[in-house]
Every structure is written in C-alpha cells, then in structure tokens.
Length: 364
Ligand SMILES: [Zn+2]
Image 1 (tube, rainbow, N blue to C red):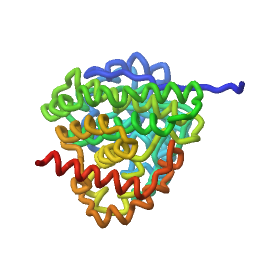
Image 2 (cartoon, rainbow, N blue to C red):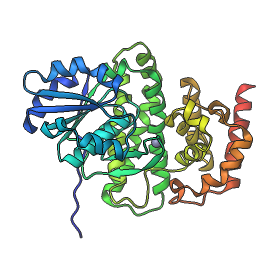
Image 3 (cartoon, rainbow, N blue to C red):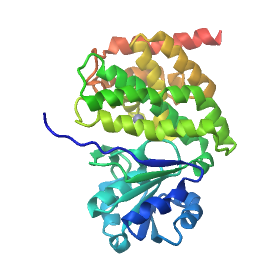
C-alpha cells in the first residue's frame, strides 16, 4: 500500500468565535494582513481588531479584488505588506477567502479564515474556485491543506443578508444526493467512503433546522438552529469535499443537480438574477426524479416550497424553449461523466415534465 496524508478542517464556531484567535494564532506569529471583501471587512473589523489586541498586530486590510482570479492573487501576493506579515486572515464569502488561500500558498504564509456569510464551505476546504477577472469560471485549484483554522462567528453571519444562507442550503443538501448517487456501485477507498457517509450531515440538519434558521437570520438572531445550518454549509460540506476529492478521480463531488445549473448558465439572466445554490436546489429535484427517488423528491420539494427555493424552471426565469435547447449539454457535462447510469435527453425531458406536472397537481 502507498502512503497518503489527510489534512482536515479545524474550526471554532459561535458568537464569540474570534475570542479564540488569541489562543490559536500567536503560535504562528505576531502580525497579520487581512484580505477580504469590502462589506465583509466592515462587518468583521471591530470584532477582529478587539479580538487580536494586544498579541497580534493587523498591518493592513486589503481588498481581494472582486474576483478570485490568478491575476488578483499574483497582485496581492506581491504586496509589500504581505511580505512583512506572519499570517494571512481571510475575511468574507467564498471568492475573498479563496483568493486569500491562494495568496497563502504562493507566499508560504499560514491562512486563517473568518467567514462573514454562510453560503459555501470555502473557509474550511482545501480548494479555491478560480475565475477570470471578468468572472468566468476557470478551474478548481487544489491545495494540500485547508486553512489552519476557521473562526466562524455566528453573530456576524446572523446579521448577513439572508439570501446567502438561503442559497447555500441548496448547494449543501445537493452534496448528499450527488455524492451518494455518483459513488453508487463503486468500491470506495477509506477516505472516499468516509466522505460519502458524512454527506448525510449536509442534508439532515438543513431539512430539520433550515426554515427556522432563515427566520432567525432575518431577525439577526444567532440561534441553535442557525448554528446547525451554518455548520452544515461550512464544516460538513468541506469535510465531504476534502474526502471525496482526495484522489480527484472519479468526481463524486458533483452530479446531475450541478449539471442542471451549469447548462442553464448559457442564459446570462440566470446568474445575473439568481444564486448558484438557488439553481442547484432546482437541480436536486430533477436529480431525484431522474433517480426515481420520489419520496425524497417530495421531501425536498416541500422544503423548497416553504423556504422559497425554486420548484420550477419558471422560478429561475427559464422558458421551456430555453430548457429544451440546453438538455443535450446537460448530459455531457463533467458533473455526470461518472454516474451509475447514462444521463440521457429523454430522461431529462421526462424529469422536467414530471416536475411541472407535479406543480400543477399541487396548485389544484
Ligand atoms: Zn455548488
């Protein structure tokens, strides 16, 4: 047998998560530079400045540049203040944190993450999603390790715009269905099997606590339910992602729900008006119908309905003609390349019409 290593997320979660910065970070140095989004740095600055004093000096707050692109990463990595800092503090949502992780890799400095919204698992995972400076997807960029530690401040997250956690829930429960289905029938390595088993924690807490968590987010209330959903979106999803992408092939990290999303991005309105996880939540309904999991379909359908996640292509402003034109593309995307059965155009046609028929029945 060959050797292999696993580097797993380490995190603190709670309204006082930043209080543990003083216990964890001084082992790595005395100075830090913050890389983040404008709104995120505003939201975190007061609590962060108070938390680091007097042990750590924050040398500067640097804007991440708006996109996680190799260009922005190289520009920031060349910044003189970064050269002087012992650590990098990544503050924000996915793109800002992803950018800071890349800067950490280039400069060899330890990265600590401070998510200010709960929309994805960037704060705990060992991959950055790279885009061009215009925001066009390029590739996932994998690291050996995730950030040294994530400080997940649920007070700050409870005060963030609701739409991020709302859409993040869709992307998170998708992980459970996609990992399960994509790996079905395969003999799995220990780490892959762990990841697939853990993916249950990406779905159950969302269905149990999601609705209440959204209400609490709306009221800016840091509740138990909100914290469970934040854990599912950030920590559980990151764990699954790290385990199931360990050998990069085959890809258990995605599936038909994501193929639905990527094929529909052919229409610019989709990404202008809708969030990734929101559209993926619609994709999960199609995935479940195509997989003939009708009971599970009803469960997700009811959840989407009460939380306002999409239950129809019309909810994401796609017409029947538009949908028809991208169905062939849906069957060829890498997300469904490794799947227990061939995803075909007739299968998708049937699934989408089942969904609209079901909508009609429910409206009657
Ligand atoms: Zn996704």
